[in-house]
Length: 340
Ligand code: NDP
Ligand code: GDR
Image (cartoon, rainbow, N blue to C red; front, top):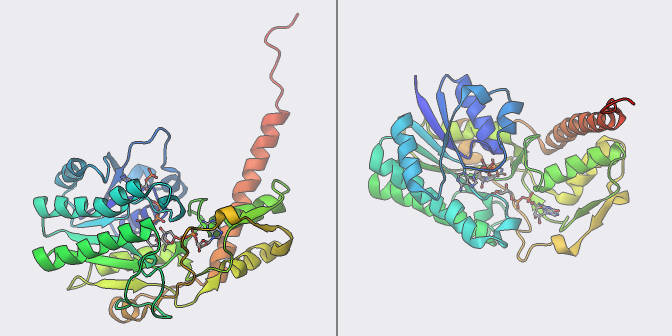
């Protein structure tokens, strides 16, 4: 049985990728960082938690990566772990550099020192394009990152390219544009919106505070995007690929889609909060996935409207269950401790 290692297995993409690899018959090992509370809810949501071997370690601790690779003997390593929230990268630039940037080098070194035949995937990002130089971004578009996160990702990207060229590693960098799902973290704008729409619809929230709603993103579905990761590692030659839908949408339009799905007008609820603006913004991203389509045979299957509707539907279910539980807990009157 082939085995694979995933860092960032508790994140959105880690969970979808783990499911994909299990379905393909892999034994899946996941690196799990020590946290005070459990972070495996996404694996539970997909019903795969018990099928994965979770091994504790950290991207900032190369010895834990070497130990994991020696134990798992993987044919493929997917490096998805990162401090992945752009907004937080201005508050914690050094942590972001250590995890999102240097963490990549730790994984590459762990591979080089244990088994250089391993196929390696690096989760690179459209944030590396930043201040865009070309209206549609592809593999040859120059980079100009605009956040500590983007700079850290660029380091990881070039290290991946460099280890491929220097040591002949089968190392691929997937330059993925934004991809979302019901498993997206609540700090990211699409999930913040879908969760708020559900809460407003169910009378549990009155408004939604957002920053720059004129920013444009090329949003796809995470479940589609993990297929591209796997396909990259099945090719004859390692290479870098842009993975995107080829359509871009403003945050404003995304809000309109989400609110109108439940019969509401976003203008009645969205409040612009200047504190949520970023110190330096990436105004517009639009990817050209032609190379991924041509070589990998990959194409996004879910458009932005369906994606947002899927997320609102999932949050309506989740928030309804939460409301129900709250009502039951409040209604429950325990028997008095003793009766006089
Ligand atoms: P998430 O934020 O959902 O997941 C990040 C994962 O990294 C979590 O499992 C987290 O663990 C783990 N992690 C964080 N710090 C460490 C550490 N020091 N050691 C080990 N693990 C750590 O991200 P996504 O799933 O959305 O994204 C996956 C990858 O793809 C990330 O690298 C992201 O930057 C990149 N990317 C994402 C895009 C997107 O639109 N989703 C687009 C382009 C790139 P824990 O849960 O314990 O914190
Ligand atoms: P992004 O995603 O920064 O593109 O990074 P995010 O959803 O955080 O922001 C998208 C755009 O929305 C604007 N915005 C807001 N964003 C958040 N989070 N919260 C708000 O209230 C808000 N209001 C407006 C932002 O300014 C931005 O323009 C994601 C992450 O998954 C990265 O890890 C990944 O590399 C990139 O996508 C591609």
